[in-house]
Amino acid sequence: MSVPLSGAAPVPIPSRTQFVLEALTRAILTGQLTPGSPLVENELAARFGVSKTPVREALKTLAGRGLVVMSEYRGAAVRTVDAAMARSVYDVRLLLEPEAVRRTVAGRSDLTAAHTALARADSAVDTAERSLANRDFHRALYLPCGNPLLAQLLDDLRDQAALVSSFAWQVDPTWRREADEHRAILARAEEGDAEAAARLLHEHIQGFVRRAFPKDSNEETQA
Image (tube, rainbow, N blue to C red; front, side, top):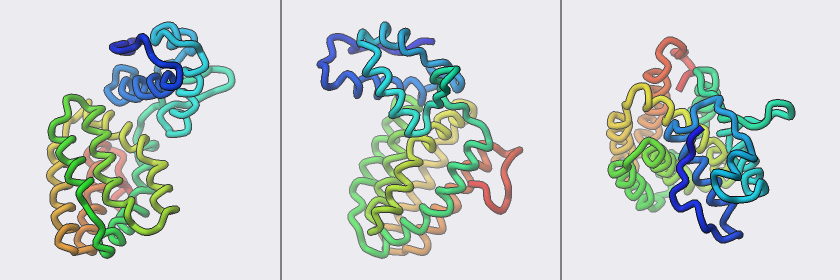
């Protein structure tokens, strides 16, 4: 297991958990920590030059975000990505996200953050940065939907969606196509065409998993 340690020391005590959290997130999303990799507290603490407490807290947070699985007997490990996992995450997004975006556009919300996220994705240097920027693009479109519960439900899926996209891009880097689809969605949103923006988003979410997991896609429900 190889975790980048640049900037690992010295780290102020209040930020140690956040530091470990960000480093592990990047390592997972770049594939440096592959799906199924064990995450041993003692080893991680030694690598980051911290006690086990911030490592334990970071792992709990990652488990809550769906990037890590924790077992009483086997400990923590990077979550495995497969068609079933992707199907579950993207099927919920498919059900909720187009409606949220429809409401955002209908409410004439500010879309500046979406433009910023697109620019970050274009200039990203690795799959982690690109996936997180894409995640933020989607969030910029659904967050102003006017329903905090709907936005929170989608927020809870953000990291898992980023994990799926990062994993898929390592096999087949289709991110340029997804970026073009993002631009088309944003263009319709800026025109105030809520129905077209929601339709394009639906097609975008649905098409991604069909491309990433072609043998396992379901024509009716997969996204």
